[in-house]
Each structure stands twice: as structure tokens, then as C-alpha cells.
Length: 470
Image (cartoon, rainbow, N blue to C red):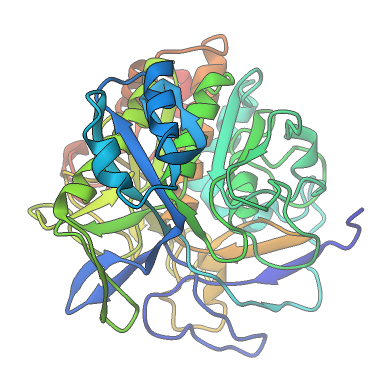
């Protein structure tokens, strides 16, 4: 049983190092986009054990197709709801033999890429104690920014709503998360890793995201946007590397849809070159696949998203952290942010909040991706732009393994919106068409610029109180 709970500082950065203050030195956390001559490309990719995704022409699978494929390879798993089979080839002419089957649309390597970069952290030795009902609530400026307390005071806290967190696992024993965590439904789609992360005091991305959505109202630690919502951990990324196979993410989406998800949060992203080129962090070409493969990867993930959407799931995702303009950028695609039927979130932040709590909380975060074709709505994600030693207070405070941490990124913005979506659904009886949830989110967002049609803020910055009262 995990018993020790501490406070941890960590931060997001791009290529440069984080600032160093008198407390500690911090390293980076970001979604998996790296830079090659100014353009964003996917991080190092691999095909685990040479598995392939076989995509059928129909969004279903027949027994006959599975039998035919099994003649040429070992079937590892299937996602019958979207017509995908994961296969390990056993035949030297596997691709040709399976590709010639009449029911097969395409065969592509089941690429595994880094959706989150590993983070190194140094602990803050003395935990803060504030003395409020939730001891660390005074540091959660994001709740003030979206008027979450006013929503709670109106009686809406996410009761009866299920939010599935597709990420790198969750600390199941964390006192802020355990009251709201459904351990029976939680699952892992990462080979040899349990959805419940390893014990220890360290930063875990999925745990941080989960706390923003649903940290319990328990007079302990922090509080989430929807403190009575039911959360389910769906591990689709390795807790050690941040990498995950496309098939695992697609399977996680379908799993959530089949198990009663009202909301899916995906604080993850990968920027792919449409020409099929993959580069390492130094910009060296490490792999080149036919551009058709990228098209089929996109198709497969869109099938998974569409399946969940049709099952009534509201899907929230992060815009990405490369400060990239998504408008007019035809050479790359961000998954899942660029897909249909997802709500894509950019990040906002204060500047020098610790010096002046009345400061503007809606500055555009320095790292966030933007563009009218990409961003639907904005939410608190935090930043690290301040030149003062207390810069980390401009970041988002939430749960980590055996403690709490500040972090920043569109990964932190997305769960703020997921929490508000849960409040809306809860107000409407625990079940609501995702199109209606989207309309309510957009209609009640606070316009920051461009009259609710902004390349930076989308329809505006999400407002929890307006979302449940208008």
C-alpha cells in the first residue's frame, strides 16, 4: 500500500531547459512532436514485434476473414467494431497474400511512437499546508478561471457520469483519486504493464490528468473540476516511455465506448508527416513509409473515434505543445486533434499569478498549438514564462504518484474541458448526445477574442458555471 504523499514540482518546456530557482531544477514534459528544420514531425517510431494492422473494407470483421488471415499470420488481437485485426506475420509473403484477400482494404505496420516524452523530476522537500477544506485548493487558479466553484455551489459535481482517461495509467491508491476510481473497469492496452502504475514518488502523466478531472472533495490535497465523477483508467501509453501503438489507442477508444463512457479524455498527441517520413530528435531521418500508410493510420483512428461518437461519447483531446499554426499546414496531421468528432483544446495561463492573484488568467500559453482549423475551445494549461522565482505557480497543480505536482501543457487544458463536459452531462441526467454537449460547451464559453471564433481560443475559454446555468 502506498502511504507517503509529497508535493512535487515539474514543468513543461520545448527545446530549451527550464528555469532553475532556489528550490529545484526541472525537466520537460510534452506531447510527441519534435522539430526538423522548423516543421513538426512525429517522434521516433517502431513496429513492435513486426505486428501489422489489417484494416478491412467494412467496419466489421467476418469469421471467414479471420480464418483466411490466420493461414499467413498469428492473430494477436482484433477490434471487430472498427474492422481491424492485429497480426504477427508467419509467412514470408504475408503482405501480398493478405493484401489480395477480397475483404482487406490495407495492411500497415502497427507503429508504436512516443506520444509523451519521459520526464525527470526533483522533489520539493517540504509539502505545503494551507489549511482550507482542500489544503492545496488556493493554488488551483484554473478552477477560478473557469468558474468551477460557482458550478459546484449550484449543485453540479459530475454525479452519475463516467469519464475514461486514456493515458499512461493512474495511481489507484492516491487518496484524491481512489474515491472516484472504478478499478473494475480500468484496463491496460500496453503489453506487460498494468493500468495501476508502479509505486513511488514521481510524475505520472495520467495521474496528473485524472486529478484535474476528478480529484475528490475529501478535505485532502486538490479538487477536480468534477469531484464526484466516476473515472476509469485506460492505459494506452507506457508509463515509462510515453509511447504507445496506434492499435492500442484505437482499442482503448473502442473499449471505453463499449463500457459506458460518457466522456473520453485523450491528453496525448502525435504529429505525423503525411509523406511518411519519421525523424529522431536531432532531425535525422530514421524511417520512411509510403504516404498511403499514414492515410490508413488516420482512417483507422477516425473509425475508432466515429465508433465512440456514435455510441454517445464526448471526446476531448489536447491541441499539442509545439506553438504550431494548424491553419494552412497541409504537410502534417496531428492525431487525434485534427480528426472529426473530437473537441480540441488549446491552453491558457496567467502571468506572475503568485505576485498578483487578480492577474488575467486567460493569457495564451506560450507553447500551445493554434489555428481555426485545429482549436475548438481553450482551457487552463499553465505556463512557465515568468522571469520570477515563483514561475511554477503559473502552472497547473494536480495529483501524481504518491503526491502532487505542478505541470503545464495542453495535456492539462484538455481535462479541464472534460470535467466541464461531465458537469453538463450530469445536469442532463447522466446521458447526453455528444453533439449537444459540444454545443453547450461552445455556446457558454467566454469569448476572449475574435467574438468566439479565434485561432487561439476557438469558441472561447470554457466556463463551468455558464455551462450548467445557461
